[in-house]
Amino acid sequence: MTAPHTVTTSRPGGEDTAEARPTHWQRLAPPLVVAVVLLVWSNLVLPALPADAVLKALFNVGGVAAMITVARLLGVTWADLGIGRGTWAAGLRWGGAAIGVAVLGYGAVLAVAPELLENPQLAGASPGSLLLRGLVLIPLGTVLAEELAFRGVLHGHSARALPVRAALGVSAVAFGLWHLSVALGPSAVPLPPALHWTSVLLVLAVTVVGGLALGWLRHRTGSVLAPIGLHLGTNAVGLVAAGVALAH
Image 1: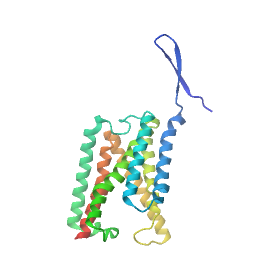
Image 2 (image 1 turned 90 degrees about the vertical axis):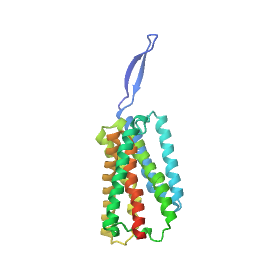
Image 3 (image 1 turned 30 degrees about the vertical axis):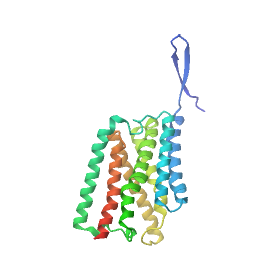
């Protein structure tokens, strides 16, 4: 077993003390634990809850708040978490631009081919329920919670233990596996087994790639506000666009 490295320091009185440096595995432990907790949370805890979107959103927000608290107690800084004050301006610029691109993109599709945005699962949903999902549940329970968890806490721990590319890869793969229970669930259209598993792999691949894009924005700006903007653009703006498509 590898012993921890030590470094000798001197106190003001001249007395030398030895401080243990964490080993490689000790540095890897926090991101590995965070990744496992996130996957258990998404694929075992949330599916076991009652089918109540508000309850699940509250659980997600409460869970990520607890993770941030533990991370801070372990010495992870606000900058490590992507919410340091010095990164707000860059995060808002990139995040705002991402939302703007999403609005323009969905608007163009609505103008040219609105049928592409129709979602049968939204049929019969009231305008009030769509507004609740689009303006509250998705922004807080999905986007904010997931970005703080993956591009905040997990990336913050990973970047302290791994090279940048490896840290981005860890958060992206974990983000893909976070969606495993959703990918394995029943699809809107019944599929034969072969196509079902193909769709599962496709969902995982798309979410991993999405995780890489979100992680790149986090690394580029140093802020979780940038990936929050992109995530909002694809999810919340997309839901509003789908609702408009169904209404017309």
